[in-house]
Image: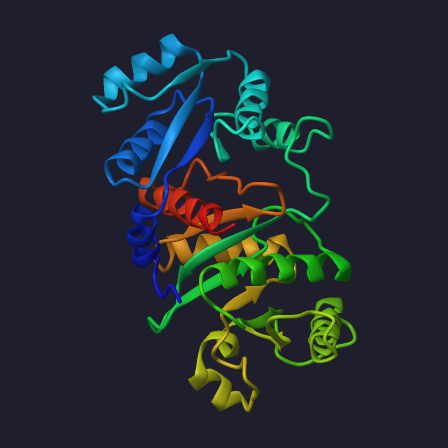
Length: 301
């Protein structure tokens, strides 16, 4: 079982190197993290974009990236399409969003004829170190699904369980997060949490333990769970934190980064290969963790 972000960064060095196709790579943050990833032996790259502009940025930043192949494409749409095509043709193992909009990148990913669709729901998972240092927390979905239905939440949980199991969590503990730890008929998310818990009891959601609803404190803190009388195998010990909607997920993701000053990685699954799709505001270190986590997942598939 992988117990820390540092362990992900270390383990991926000794696995076969994945090649990442970066759409619109002419960006100093992107090139900086690619430079570090190459130096650390985490992954290889193909840059997609205007070759002259990319080479100019490489020279300006004094990056050791002269040997990285560059595939010519000029506008954002063409760059996204080409990055996906490099994956579908087997020349790369996953695409990465560079300096272009998420919408443009995802249109290429989701193209029915040439994209990376599988028929599964696509969801995002934030990875960070647990507060007690005993492992990783997988938080989902913080970026893709705005207001998931009960059916969507089943898929989101299954995606997160799939990822956690690849990282060695054979039977991850899943906490369905809401604003409180009791069922309230006026709050649909608490009803969904209770339904998902019962579905897990009856074997409809497998390879994990699902419980809820939980508030954040009693999902991750045994002390808080004990004080509030919240019991069960997930209480205070959750591996996966399944948020009720993107509002909760987005705020939690950013609070971890900015208030808690903790490192995070992000993985997007549900496609035929992982997607590396970091935020422009993510630090270089967090981008590196996302690359390492996605590369590790790809190597285990």
